[in-house]
Image (cartoon, rainbow, N blue to C red; front, side, top):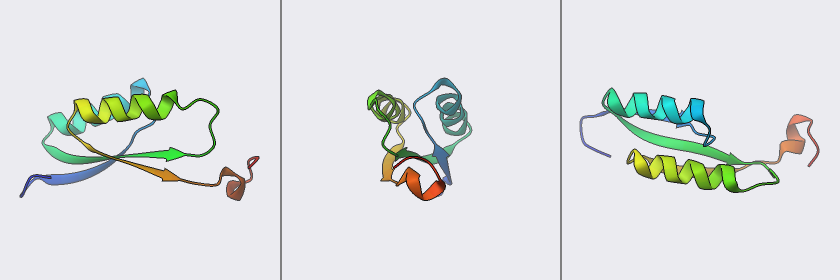
Length: 75
């Protein structure tokens, strides 16, 4: 990340809304870290798209594994 830039963490699902927020934060001068979650979703395309979007905007992309069952969902 660039020295002196404001920092932001953007939750990035790979969909239109979160991708737009990442674009706006980048446009507004933030050095962004895009944060995605792997929660056992059936299709990995979400995470693939999130990685593509993060790369497009020059954001660091991090994926965190979570157990959705700990929130009451089916593990």
